[in-house]
Image (cartoon, rainbow, N blue to C red):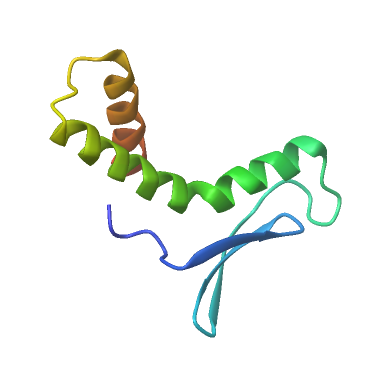
Length: 90
């Protein structure tokens, strides 16, 4: 999956942005802007971390596959998470 917006993602009051150099792009809004519940804030943090989590999960999968660690339920969970991120929605 290479189509997502690259750069550092961050949360600012419920708005998720991605920054590449001087370019800042809004990704999405979470909850009611500037009136965030604790759940909204947690969701916004998770969304802002998504690209880092995706890249880390891909790296972990590659490392584990190189050590022939297959067939384990944790590998299935990793594979399912990556597939969920990469699947085209219709």
